[in-house]
Length: 398
Image (tube, rainbow, N blue to C red):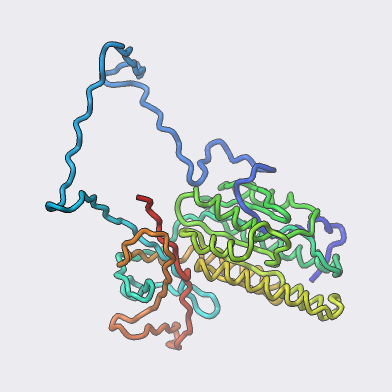
């Protein structure tokens, strides 16, 4: 891994963590773009009925005229002796994004709706329909942008960050013109680098604008919570690419609270890339930690947190051992988010009480037996089914 002395600033520029919606340094989107979740006002036609000028005249009110009273709606009556009741019909449709990949991360195509068995809290659900998602993606690149708060060789660490930045640049290059993407960095707090845009040039310029990190704080809990909170106003399925060590210094939120927030999200899939393992092994092998076991424990906890963020939402967790693996990881993520099976069902439990429902997905052959996947040479392939561990039902307040 080469290091470029003249690029120490950008060397730290590694793609570590962003949330989308903060006001600072927001790159303005082109005027003809429409942001995800935004609604454009309807413009009345230039000409009204019968060729009028399109101007709507509002008649003046007569102060003596009383508006007619609406007729009371008839109530539904129960049998004698029982209280009146109302009828509420649940139309909740649960969507489960599912990735079926080989052990090498290759997407397995060709599955049908009857190949999927979905269980909610242990009860099998009837799959209403299944479709292959190949739609434009809406994603936030959430990038940690801080320097390590312990004694290490900053020059080597910067070179590692530079490799990570190049990987982020590769992911940005894979975006299509229909995709929406935002870039958010975080240290003590999240900062909007690029607001949602379809202009790939703005994304690349935003990554290039990240210079020397000024803080050693890394409040990933707060940054992730803020990102999830803001994504609730964006329509459709969303993705978060979280890249960082996973270490949290002193967020206002606790781990339990951020995990509860992640569990409550419905239409967000999180992919995480942990930079801690490679840095830990590299520095520890050179005595940079001076035999301090607490640093390794801190990294181990951080890795587990990053793994939990991904598994709870049906995403994937990556822990590269060498920086040369990162471009391939970015390519896997780009392929996965564009190739997912979307399975829909109406839960047998219609209660909209805000409860958390555990999910389990299995694959089956048309005859009901286990599904076997083979390559072109007839060799059986091992595969994994990736999906979110559960979801929180919508809560209706009567």
